[in-house]
Every structure is written in C-alpha cells, then in structure tokens.
Length: 434
Image (cartoon, rainbow, N blue to C red):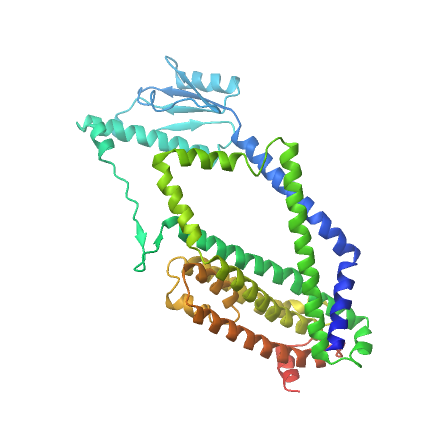
C-alpha cells in the first residue's frame, strides 16, 4: 500500500508540474471566456442588424400585417411597377423587396416573391412567412363571414396540473429541469473520461517507450502501478477542474464589473421581482420553485459523486490497459471506439428514452448495465428511483470495476513489457489468461 501512495504522489506531481498542464490549466478558462464573449458579441451584431424592406403590395392585404420594429423597417411602395421597385430597392441598398401581385386571394399565396441581393436568413424568412400566412388566413375567414373576435375569445390554453398519488405536485418544467441535470452529468462524465482517460493512456505509453517502466515494474506489482497512475491522474484532473471553476468565476465577476452590470443582482432578480408582482405569472413561478424544491438534491449530489467516480475509474482502467498494450497512440485507435461507444449510447438512451419513460424497461435495463449506468441512472434519479435500485446499480458498477481492473492488470502486466508488435483483440484475450 505504501508503494501505491508513492506512485499516486509521483503521478500527481508529475502532471501538475508539467509545463503544458500548467499552461492549459490557466489558458483554457481564458479561451473559453473569450469564445463565449465572441459568440455573444457576434449574436448581438446579427440580432441588432437593421433591415429596411421595400414592400410592393398590389392587393393591399398586408398593410396592417407588416409593422415596423426597432431593427426592421417596412417601406411601402405604391403606384409603381415591379421593375421600378427593384431599382429603388437596389439603389438604396435595402435588405430586400417583398412583392405581392394583384391576384385573387386563392392564388396570391403561391405568387408572393422576395427579391434580395444576398440570400436572406432563414429566421427572417420564416418570420415573414408567418406574418403573411396569419394575415391571409384572417382575410379568408372574414370573407367567409366569420367573426375574428369570437375566434380570439374562444381560444383556450390548458395547463395540466400534475400530481402524484402521494400528493406531490409537478409540472412540465420539472421534467426538463430533471433531464437537464442528467444531460449535464452525463456530458461532464463523458468529457472527463475522454480528456483524462487519454492522459492516462499517453502516460503509460510514454513510460513504456522510454523503458522506465522496466525498472519500476521490478519492485512494484503491475496492479498497484496501474491504480497509482489512475488515482494520481484523476487527482490532477480534479485539481485542474477546480482551478477552471474558480478562474471562470473570477473572470465572470471581472467581466460584469468591466461591462457595468452586476451578474448576481441585476437582470435575474429584477425579472423575478417583476414576475412575483404579477399575479398571472406568480402561480407559474411558484410551481417552478416547488418543482425545484421537490428534487432530491441530497440524493442527486451523493449519487453524482459515487457514480461519477466509479464510472470514471471503470473506463480509466481500460485506458491504462490499452496504453500498456500498444507502443504508440496510432495503434491505440482500434481499441478506443469500443470504449467510447457505450458512453455515446448511454447519452442517447438517456436523452431520448428517459425523458419519455424514465421507468420503462429500456431505461431500467441501461441503468443497470455498468458501462451505461453512470449516465442513465443519474438521468433517472431526478424522476424518482427507489434507493434499493440505486444501490443495486452501484454495487453492479463497483463489482464490474473490480473485475475490469483485475483483467486490465493482466493485460498491463504482459503488455507493459511487449515491444515492436501491434496487438490484436486475440492477443489481449490471451494475455488475460496468463
């Protein structure tokens, strides 16, 4: 056990003192914050783009439907021909020309055209089509003698009040809230495994190719060496992740002060206060708060920590075995896909199945399979999973981890001293029997 602690310390300090590790630890939050700021800036430029639209409406149907806004201005043209309208629009560098020909109502919808120098955005086209369709529909109803005010008054919106047999009230919002937690947990686990699993594999390959491992393995059991690498690299990853969270928080505070807004008190609290003062929205806000309070927060936190750690250790042991089996990263690619596929499958099953039926047979089965349970079970827990099911799934995961570590150690013991041969799956099976 003393050897194991020494290996963990060695791996940890070797990683955190590495120049590239230090550089990426401090540069990554800056890059992420910069990309987020750039996306927000570019989005604001696109949303705030001022558009002037020429409208040649020979029918007069759309005079009341197209109302100018802050960023979109409709310039109605009258008493001119289409060619003249094109020239005016082009000479003034307007965004485009909307042309509605003088045709019967039943035919005009197929002949409406929009002329522009460049291809208009899809959002703009959909918005314009929606306005035209709505207005033409109203005109047809009016021509049929239908009173539009009665139709408007007849509109009724139903919001089902959901409640369990135990008296616990929920809503549609709570389902998306629960799914968001599961997707965030699954994505975080997926990225952690990809980043630090590959780090473990590269570390093993480097020591193997440099022949340092031959000296180390003479005095340390392979399983302790492998576990030491896994635990040491994991601790380094947790350290890096913690620094990222702290730096991103500091950058957020600095950015809020630089741009002149308080991220903790301004728009969110103002919106909440306004909604709370509105009696119509007060019940919906209260339902949202009740849904959040009804979540098993403590259960979610404990389950996240346990499934996250066990799931990561399960996959990282396989990465370590692959690193011991190959001589370079190129040869490792044939073994990476079978490791990643269960994680991808888990995310898709959780996203498409758990939301629709969290207690269905597919969701239950995949929440017990150890290679998918860290993701699927975390997605199911917010919807209410009995404690015995969580414990059973965790026990299966832990047992599988122990078996995988035992098998990976066999591969590690043989593969760490094998050079010059590209291993196959048949070779790995043979090494497991030694």
